[in-house]
Amino acid sequence: MATETPIRLVDYAPYPFSVVAVTLHFVLHPTATIVTSKLTIKRTAPGALVLDGEQLKLLRILMDGVALKEQDYRLTDTTLMIKSAPDEFALEITTEINPSANTALSGLYQSSGNWCTQCEAEGFRRITFYPDRPDVMSIFMVQVEAEKSAAPILVSNGNCVETGELENGRHYAVWYDPWPKPAYLFALIAGDLALSADEFTTMSGKQLTLGIYTEHGKQNLTSYAMDALKRSMRWDEEKYGCEYDLDVFNIVAVSESAKT
Image 1 (spheres, rainbow, N blue to C red):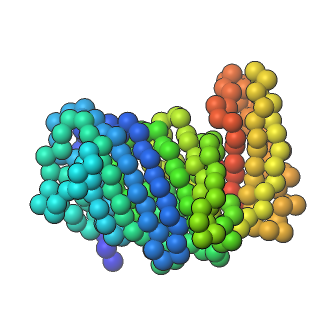
Image 2: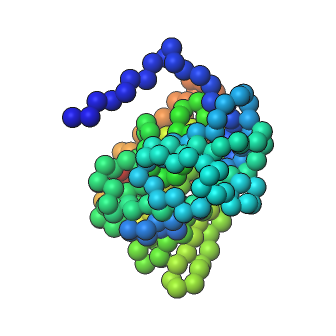
Image 3: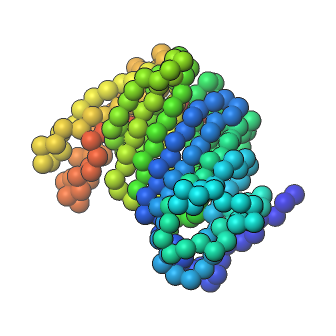
Protein backbone atom coordinates (compact mmCIF):
# COMPACT_ATOMS: atom_id res chain seq x y z
CA MET A 1 0.00 0.00 0.00
CA ALA A 2 1.16 3.53 -0.78
CA THR A 3 2.12 5.56 2.28
CA GLU A 4 1.07 9.18 2.66
CA THR A 5 3.76 11.83 3.04
CA PRO A 6 3.17 13.66 6.34
CA ILE A 7 2.58 17.41 6.23
CA ARG A 8 4.31 19.03 9.20
CA LEU A 9 3.67 22.48 10.61
CA VAL A 10 7.40 23.06 10.98
CA ASP A 11 7.73 22.85 7.18
CA TYR A 12 5.00 25.43 6.51
CA ALA A 13 5.90 28.48 4.42
CA PRO A 14 3.47 31.08 3.04
CA TYR A 15 2.64 30.70 -0.62
CA PRO A 16 4.83 33.18 -2.57
CA PHE A 17 1.98 34.40 -4.79
CA SER A 18 -1.46 35.89 -4.29
CA VAL A 19 -4.27 34.70 -6.57
CA VAL A 20 -6.27 37.92 -6.78
CA ALA A 21 -9.14 36.55 -8.86
CA VAL A 22 -10.20 33.30 -10.52
CA THR A 23 -12.44 32.88 -13.57
CA LEU A 24 -13.50 29.32 -14.39
CA HIS A 25 -15.31 28.14 -17.51
CA PHE A 26 -16.70 24.60 -17.51
CA VAL A 27 -17.93 22.92 -20.69
CA LEU A 28 -19.50 19.85 -19.13
CA HIS A 29 -19.29 16.46 -20.83
CA PRO A 30 -19.48 13.01 -19.20
CA THR A 31 -16.07 11.87 -20.43
CA ALA A 32 -14.35 15.03 -21.71
CA THR A 33 -15.16 18.11 -19.61
CA ILE A 34 -13.10 21.14 -20.62
CA VAL A 35 -12.06 23.49 -17.81
CA THR A 36 -10.49 26.85 -18.58
CA SER A 37 -9.13 28.77 -15.61
CA LYS A 38 -7.95 32.38 -15.75
CA LEU A 39 -5.90 33.44 -12.74
CA THR A 40 -4.81 36.97 -11.87
CA ILE A 41 -1.57 36.46 -9.93
CA LYS A 42 0.75 38.75 -7.97
CA ARG A 43 4.04 37.80 -6.35
CA THR A 44 4.22 38.34 -2.58
CA ALA A 45 7.59 36.68 -1.82
CA PRO A 46 10.50 34.98 -3.57
CA GLY A 47 9.78 31.48 -4.81
CA ALA A 48 8.60 29.36 -7.69
CA LEU A 49 5.02 29.24 -8.97
CA VAL A 50 3.97 25.65 -8.29
CA LEU A 51 0.37 24.60 -8.93
CA ASP A 52 -1.24 21.38 -7.74
CA GLY A 53 -2.89 19.08 -10.26
CA GLU A 54 -3.88 15.41 -10.41
CA GLN A 55 -5.35 13.33 -13.24
CA LEU A 56 -5.59 16.36 -15.53
CA LYS A 57 -4.94 16.45 -19.26
CA LEU A 58 -3.14 19.72 -19.97
CA LEU A 59 -4.27 21.30 -23.23
CA ARG A 60 -2.86 24.83 -23.18
CA ILE A 61 -1.14 27.45 -21.01
CA LEU A 62 -1.16 31.18 -21.75
CA MET A 63 0.74 33.82 -19.81
CA ASP A 64 -0.52 37.35 -20.49
CA GLY A 65 -2.09 35.97 -23.66
CA VAL A 66 1.06 34.30 -24.98
CA ALA A 67 1.17 30.51 -25.28
CA LEU A 68 3.90 28.87 -23.20
CA LYS A 69 6.18 26.28 -24.74
CA GLU A 70 7.11 23.02 -23.05
CA GLN A 71 10.47 24.42 -21.97
CA ASP A 72 8.65 27.20 -20.09
CA TYR A 73 7.11 24.88 -17.51
CA ARG A 74 7.62 21.54 -15.79
CA LEU A 75 4.76 19.08 -15.52
CA THR A 76 4.63 16.08 -13.17
CA ASP A 77 1.86 13.74 -12.07
CA THR A 78 0.98 16.10 -9.19
CA THR A 79 2.33 19.57 -10.02
CA LEU A 80 2.73 22.19 -12.72
CA MET A 81 5.65 24.58 -12.19
CA ILE A 82 5.88 27.75 -14.26
CA LYS A 83 9.48 28.73 -14.81
CA SER A 84 10.51 32.38 -14.50
CA ALA A 85 7.12 33.70 -13.38
CA PRO A 86 7.00 37.52 -13.31
CA ASP A 87 5.79 39.56 -10.35
CA GLU A 88 2.33 40.21 -11.79
CA PHE A 89 0.60 38.39 -14.64
CA ALA A 90 -2.50 36.63 -15.96
CA LEU A 91 -2.31 32.86 -16.32
CA GLU A 92 -4.82 30.91 -18.42
CA ILE A 93 -4.82 27.12 -18.24
CA THR A 94 -7.08 24.78 -20.21
CA THR A 95 -7.43 21.18 -19.08
CA GLU A 96 -9.60 18.16 -19.86
CA ILE A 97 -11.01 15.81 -17.23
CA ASN A 98 -13.15 12.68 -17.32
CA PRO A 99 -15.90 13.00 -14.64
CA SER A 100 -17.50 9.61 -15.39
CA ALA A 101 -14.21 7.81 -14.77
CA ASN A 102 -13.55 9.63 -11.49
CA THR A 103 -14.51 6.91 -9.02
CA ALA A 104 -12.55 8.55 -6.20
CA LEU A 105 -15.45 11.01 -5.74
CA SER A 106 -12.90 13.78 -5.30
CA GLY A 107 -12.87 16.78 -7.60
CA LEU A 108 -15.53 16.80 -10.34
CA TYR A 109 -17.28 13.49 -10.93
CA GLN A 110 -20.47 12.23 -12.52
CA SER A 111 -22.95 9.89 -10.89
CA SER A 112 -26.55 9.06 -11.83
CA GLY A 113 -26.35 11.65 -14.59
CA ASN A 114 -25.41 14.53 -12.27
CA TRP A 115 -22.10 16.37 -12.15
CA CYS A 116 -20.97 16.81 -8.54
CA THR A 117 -17.91 18.17 -6.77
CA GLN A 118 -16.08 17.24 -3.60
CA CYS A 119 -13.14 19.57 -3.04
CA GLU A 120 -12.50 19.28 0.69
CA ALA A 121 -9.75 18.86 1.59
CA GLU A 122 -7.64 18.62 -1.60
CA GLY A 123 -10.07 17.79 -4.40
CA PHE A 124 -9.84 21.02 -6.37
CA ARG A 125 -6.52 19.90 -7.85
CA ARG A 126 -8.49 17.24 -9.77
CA ILE A 127 -10.43 20.02 -11.52
CA THR A 128 -7.68 22.40 -12.64
CA PHE A 129 -4.09 23.34 -11.82
CA TYR A 130 -4.19 25.62 -8.78
CA PRO A 131 -2.43 26.28 -5.44
CA ASP A 132 -4.78 23.91 -3.63
CA ARG A 133 -4.09 24.97 -0.06
CA PRO A 134 -6.32 26.67 2.53
CA ASP A 135 -4.20 29.80 2.93
CA VAL A 136 -4.66 30.83 -0.73
CA MET A 137 -7.88 32.86 -0.87
CA SER A 138 -9.45 34.27 -4.03
CA ILE A 139 -12.63 35.66 -5.58
CA PHE A 140 -14.32 33.22 -7.96
CA MET A 141 -16.34 33.84 -11.13
CA VAL A 142 -17.68 30.57 -12.59
CA GLN A 143 -19.43 29.91 -15.91
CA VAL A 144 -20.98 26.46 -16.31
CA GLU A 145 -22.12 25.24 -19.73
CA ALA A 146 -23.98 21.99 -20.47
CA GLU A 147 -26.68 20.34 -22.54
CA LYS A 148 -29.96 21.67 -21.16
CA SER A 149 -31.75 18.33 -21.45
CA ALA A 150 -29.08 16.59 -19.37
CA ALA A 151 -28.43 19.41 -16.90
CA PRO A 152 -31.25 21.97 -16.64
CA ILE A 153 -29.85 22.98 -13.23
CA LEU A 154 -26.41 24.65 -13.07
CA VAL A 155 -25.31 25.71 -9.60
CA SER A 156 -22.06 27.03 -8.10
CA ASN A 157 -20.94 29.29 -5.25
CA GLY A 158 -22.21 32.83 -4.72
CA ASN A 159 -24.94 34.64 -6.65
CA CYS A 160 -26.18 33.70 -10.10
CA VAL A 161 -25.50 36.83 -12.16
CA GLU A 162 -26.30 35.61 -15.69
CA THR A 163 -28.00 32.78 -17.56
CA GLY A 164 -28.50 32.22 -21.27
CA GLU A 165 -29.20 29.86 -24.13
CA LEU A 166 -26.53 28.53 -26.50
CA GLU A 167 -26.59 26.67 -29.80
CA ASN A 168 -27.27 22.94 -30.13
CA GLY A 169 -29.54 22.74 -27.10
CA ARG A 170 -26.95 23.97 -24.64
CA HIS A 171 -27.23 26.66 -21.98
CA TYR A 172 -25.07 28.35 -19.36
CA ALA A 173 -25.11 30.04 -15.97
CA VAL A 174 -22.59 32.43 -14.42
CA TRP A 175 -22.04 32.48 -10.65
CA TYR A 176 -20.03 35.11 -8.78
CA ASP A 177 -18.79 34.90 -5.21
CA PRO A 178 -17.39 38.30 -4.11
CA TRP A 179 -15.90 36.97 -0.88
CA PRO A 180 -12.39 35.45 -1.09
CA LYS A 181 -12.35 31.73 -0.30
CA PRO A 182 -9.94 28.79 -0.50
CA ALA A 183 -10.32 26.24 -3.28
CA TYR A 184 -11.60 23.52 -0.96
CA LEU A 185 -14.86 25.48 -0.57
CA PHE A 186 -15.53 25.47 -4.31
CA ALA A 187 -18.77 23.70 -5.26
CA LEU A 188 -20.51 22.91 -8.53
CA ILE A 189 -23.44 20.68 -9.32
CA ALA A 190 -25.27 20.25 -12.61
CA GLY A 191 -28.08 17.89 -13.50
CA ASP A 192 -31.79 17.28 -13.56
CA LEU A 193 -32.82 18.19 -10.02
CA ALA A 194 -35.91 19.36 -8.17
CA LEU A 195 -35.94 22.64 -6.23
CA SER A 196 -37.63 23.42 -2.93
CA ALA A 197 -37.59 27.22 -2.58
CA ASP A 198 -38.26 29.58 0.32
CA GLU A 199 -37.28 33.04 1.57
CA PHE A 200 -35.61 34.57 4.60
CA THR A 201 -35.62 38.16 5.78
CA THR A 202 -32.38 39.24 7.49
CA MET A 203 -32.13 41.53 10.50
CA SER A 204 -31.55 44.50 8.19
CA GLY A 205 -34.61 43.68 6.10
CA LYS A 206 -32.76 42.08 3.19
CA GLN A 207 -34.75 39.40 1.38
CA LEU A 208 -32.84 36.20 0.68
CA THR A 209 -33.74 33.33 -1.62
CA LEU A 210 -33.27 29.88 -0.11
CA GLY A 211 -33.13 26.71 -2.18
CA ILE A 212 -32.67 23.01 -1.55
CA TYR A 213 -31.96 20.89 -4.64
CA THR A 214 -32.81 17.21 -4.46
CA GLU A 215 -33.52 14.31 -6.74
CA HIS A 216 -37.02 14.37 -8.16
CA GLY A 217 -39.58 12.86 -5.80
CA LYS A 218 -37.68 13.84 -2.66
CA GLN A 219 -38.88 17.44 -2.30
CA ASN A 220 -41.15 16.39 0.58
CA LEU A 221 -38.08 15.46 2.62
CA THR A 222 -36.65 18.99 2.74
CA SER A 223 -39.01 20.77 5.16
CA TYR A 224 -36.94 20.09 8.28
CA ALA A 225 -33.70 21.07 6.54
CA MET A 226 -35.26 24.34 5.38
CA ASP A 227 -36.52 25.12 8.88
CA ALA A 228 -33.11 24.30 10.36
CA LEU A 229 -31.45 26.61 7.83
CA LYS A 230 -33.72 29.51 8.80
CA ARG A 231 -33.18 28.91 12.51
CA SER A 232 -29.41 28.76 11.98
CA MET A 233 -29.41 32.06 10.10
CA ARG A 234 -31.48 33.71 12.81
CA TRP A 235 -29.21 32.29 15.52
CA ASP A 236 -26.12 33.72 13.78
CA GLU A 237 -27.79 37.14 13.75
CA GLU A 238 -28.99 37.05 17.35
CA LYS A 239 -25.83 35.51 18.82
CA TYR A 240 -23.12 37.20 16.76
CA GLY A 241 -24.85 39.96 14.78
CA CYS A 242 -23.71 38.08 11.67
CA GLU A 243 -25.98 38.64 8.67
CA TYR A 244 -25.69 36.40 5.62
CA ASP A 245 -23.74 38.27 2.96
CA LEU A 246 -25.07 36.87 -0.34
CA ASP A 247 -28.46 37.08 -2.08
CA VAL A 248 -29.08 33.34 -2.23
CA PHE A 249 -28.31 30.32 -0.08
CA ASN A 250 -28.42 26.98 -1.86
CA ILE A 251 -28.14 23.47 -0.50
CA VAL A 252 -27.68 20.48 -2.78
CA ALA A 253 -28.66 17.19 -1.16
CA VAL A 254 -28.47 14.25 -3.52
CA SER A 255 -27.36 10.67 -3.08
CA GLU A 256 -23.89 11.30 -4.50
CA SER A 257 -23.06 14.60 -2.82
CA ALA A 258 -24.10 17.19 -0.26
CA LYS A 259 -22.99 20.77 -0.87
CA THR A 260 -23.85 24.23 0.39
